[in-house]
Length: 407
Ligand SMILES: Cc1cc2nc3c(=O)[nH]c(=O)nc-3n(C[C@H](O)[C@H](O)[C@H](O)COP(=O)(O)O)c2cc1C
Ligand code: SF4
Image (tube, rainbow, N blue to C red):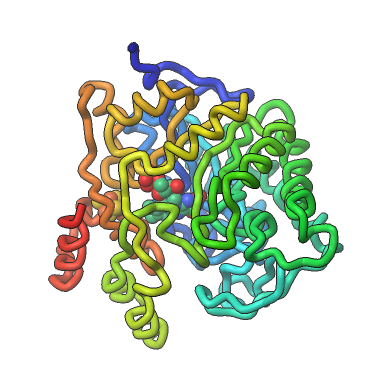
């Protein structure tokens, strides 16, 4: 069969030059919560490397939505910096998207400036912090913040936005029965748990008008007992289809309960704690990290089996993400009816991977899912250990080699 990979694809008002998208993978390159030269350079390199579209990760729609101090916070003063980034991406022939979200209970007062808010009150061990459940009368304003962020994205020159409705962030905290214990019209039945997402999508689609593409990243499963499963997430996807969203990105996992379900493999705990400044967090995570971040085995294309069930049930464009490191698997996924694929780690490992796939039918990048990039992202920035200028300290080298040798 002829490969679809290098044929154009249409997502709402947007046509991409090919079917590859750099997934939203938090760069941790935004000190002061604003874009930097480093962020621009990375996205330019991926665009020059051939992707159809690159996605700037994880921009918070309000200050309360920040979970890192090197994360974007959407506000008018960062528009000129983002404009320079989108101009650079466009000059390389790629489109630009930005992921919009709110981390909900995954923050800390020192970062988000207030007691973290979520679907329900409680304690989040992963931050660690107490959390205040949002009042129903606060939700319309929160939903409007997503719409404002879409307008800022347009002013900044983005072609698309990706609403983050998965991975245990705010919308996902409302959807999941494990984090939504509300007794009002936003909790209980799935219909009620989808109500906040519906409000957000109304605002987003209104703001997007007819010139911005809207993708939504959602969970097929939360990845732990008591979380959302396929029966409910298929209904969520149907609802998003009705909302007019132009494409869904099908993912899974929950940062505060099943983080490795998102990316698979093992988290290099020694590496993660090596870069941490806070001594008590460093030693705490070293002691209980293995228990808090359990390994989930990696398999190439690990979400494909679940994603195929969504392909059968929906007519809208679907984007596959999860464990793509080789051209052959990408062709297989596209032949299954997905309109496009996203890659995270393959493009951290090799920003020019898409161009190489054009030339080599058997191209495979050399990412071996050590997850060093994630462990480093928490404290410094997102980078692949294979591309670092500096030598890794021997203890980290040993840990990464051990993880990679397990395959
Ligand atoms: C360093 C790193 C940071 C990530 N940050 C985000 C993020 O901000 N938002 C998000 O939706 N997914 C995030 N992810 C998940 C990826 O977008 C993607 O869903 C996942 O890594 C699976 O794709 P892959 O196997 O191609 O890497 C991150 C992944 C990595 C490796
Ligand atoms: S650090 Fe490891 S997981 Fe991340 S891109 Fe590099 S090889 Fe892949």
